[in-house]
Length: 56
Image (cartoon, rainbow, N blue to C red; front, side, top):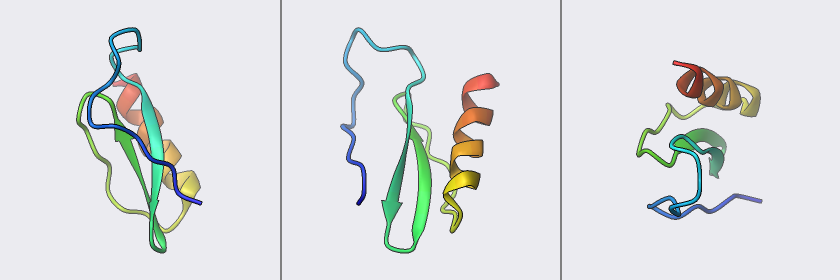
């Protein structure tokens, strides 16, 4: 099941709220700031991409 997220973050969320989204056999990380990680086959790698983005 894929997760859906809006294009804009609501005003009461942190500046960087990340989610993972599945697109076919790939998973990618997205952030409320507009950043999008590369498509990955491993969900764990997409989560790592998101964690790296928020800690930078």
